[in-house]
Length: 155
Image (cartoon, rainbow, N blue to C red; front, top):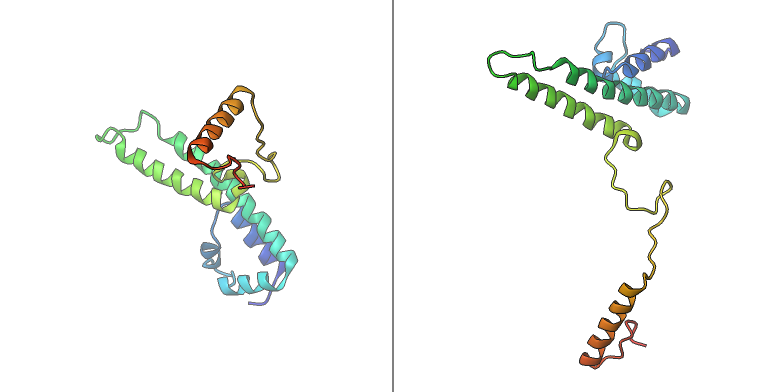
C-alpha cells in the first residue's frame, strides 16, 4: 500500500486508544505491518508522531488497570469466592503495568533511586563527627597490629 498521511493518522489514533499495530494492520483497508514499519524507517516526522501515539497508548493502558481493578468487587462470586475473577484481573493488570512501564519507563517504570542522574543530586559523603573519629581510631589500631602505615594508599 502506498503511504497516506490519513491512513497513518488513523493508525496512530488507534494505537493511542490502546490497540496494537498488529491488530490494526489486520483491519480491512489497512496496510501490512511491514509497510508501516518501512514508512517509519524512512521518515523522522512519522517516527515522532508514532512515538507520541505510543506514549498515549501507555497512558491508555495504565488507565485500563484502574478500570479492570474496579470491575471486580466483593459482589462478584461464581461459587469460587471470586478467586478466578481476581486472578484473571490481576494477570490483566500486571500485564498492562508491565507494558506501560516498558512503553514509558520514566513515567510508569520501576525506579531505583540511588542518585547522580539528571533528576537527582549525586550521592554525597561527609564525615559526621563521632562516627568518623571512631572509624579512624579503629583503622589506626588495625594498621598498628598489622605493621602497615595505616595509609590506605600505601604512601
